[in-house]
Length: 296
Length: 218
Image 1 (tube, rainbow over the protein chains, first blue to last red):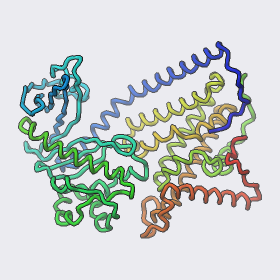
Image 2 (cartoon, chains in turn blue, green):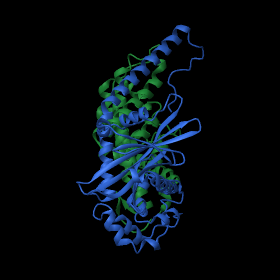
Image 3 (cartoon, rainbow over the protein chains, first blue to last red):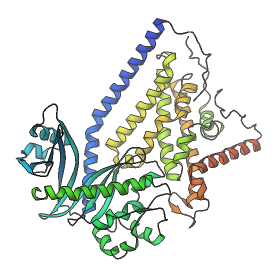
Image 4 (tube, one colour):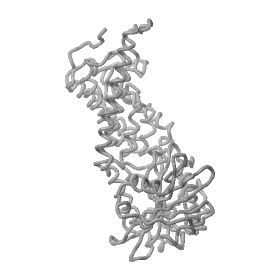
């Protein structure tokens, strides 16, 4: 940084001076936290609304839902009592409870105010209160997925997943049909480097996952080969003009000749992270659905 | 004890020209090179970071000028850091809450700014010695200088490295892929620095000495 302008004074400051410095810094930090806290309280509700609205929009796009369709959120919780594990699923109608082997333990009706609550924290508090967790237990929310309901039929699911990226977590949505074939993915939140890893949000990367079957996806690899021009044009055409359903039908025959995900650059950290994350989310989701499908 | 000494502020035009050319943060003071090199792989990225730095620079310079008489001189540097952090966080929160579309584009860049040496150095070198209005114009000039530097670097690197400008393909191949890589960022900044020196020589001015810190005495 800059060189100091004044000569460096090597004698230690007097106790009085030290007190002044300590006090000054404390007051400045308190003021700063008060200002930031105030701004947080003021902006947080609007931010939460934006995030929720954006999620709804993405889910509708990924599942090609009509405006009248309904999106249901299913939240998943774990309760550890020592080494004993209980698993909870909160659906819009009921709270379903399993033990570690997948045996149904109990179901609880969800009361109206909790069902309508917009803040996730409200739902989590209610689940914890009804889970029988005491203070020593480790109770936590561990993830969620959405089901899109079109005319009383499940149109598809959207799984929220997280995977460590280059610096911090990459949060993404994986949209699938009810036969577990992939519709597409969407990156929700990330802090990958601008110009490099942040390209995971670009259509030419994220759309390469669209239309893969469950088995094809689990075997998918990341290649450093450059993305062929015509295939790049094809994956980039998915989006505003061509919806997911339409695109998948149109390019179904071409998908097998492009079995791999083409990485963004030769350094494949972000590309591999997203691919692993999508694979893991999908694999776990299939196992979990065996448990919870009947209660949706 | 009090290190605040007032000198008559230079005129506004001088302040702005100084930020743009004579003491350009990137090409003259060689400050904040690391984030600048990391981000300027395209004009758009450069523009986003440039605008974000411009706003934080102006706000921070003005804040430092406002509080210079009430802070204990010994703790001014941590206080400057806190001021920058406050403005960056406020920008981050307000954009996320009320301008979600803009936030989607610039959110990543805003968070990078806390680590910018140029902002704190203008607070220390200029705002501490001048009133609010000249400090505003100094921040304005320096922020603008940084913005222009980001645009120049971004344009050079995107054109040569990717064959496009602002995402529009100009030529259908990558003329010199090297410049888009991190090392190429330093080459680019070095080349533009040389151009600045050449212009200075043509204007009959002595280029700055070999200290790499033309602004440290000002």
